[in-house]
Amino acid sequence: MTISASVYASILAKTALPGRLEKGGHVLSVRVYYEDTDAAGRVYYANYLKYAERARTEALFALGWNVGRLAEEDGFTFVVRRCETDYLAPAGLGDIVEIRTCVTEARGAGFTMTQVVSSDTQELARLVVDLACIGRSGKPVRLPILLKEALAGLH
Image (tube, rainbow, N blue to C red; front, side, top):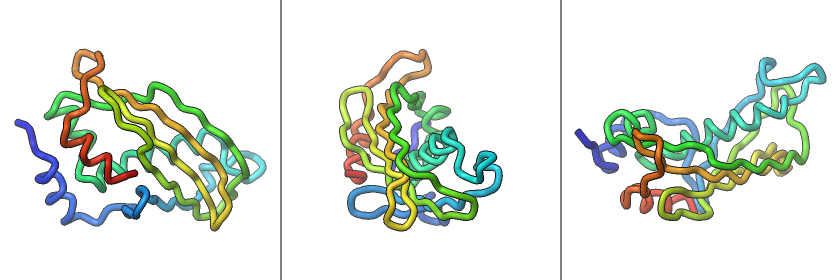
């Protein structure tokens, strides 16, 4: 059974979700915990990738798309094809960082997201992530038109 984006949106609207949609993208706030830091008390570089993954997932939820259900019910999911990260400044234990996620391009079987991790007004990391849409076979499939239209909400 396939559930439409509008049904996802109505279900999710009844649930408080982390983050918020704003003009130009989705913003997720994350507190830096001890487990996120290295021996110097700074966010370990790989954890920026985890923050970005959470933010991408929450952005899709905010648009009404449940990524778990997409795989189970609709037969497609997303995989990271390429990720380019610039680390600009460190975040530390207890800091609140915001991850702003926006779609910079949507094409046939994939899309590109730019994600900026910042604390206050300082940019800490910038990621450019290419995602591919794949079917159950593991081969690329075209983005569903409803999803492509929803992604336009993150421009």
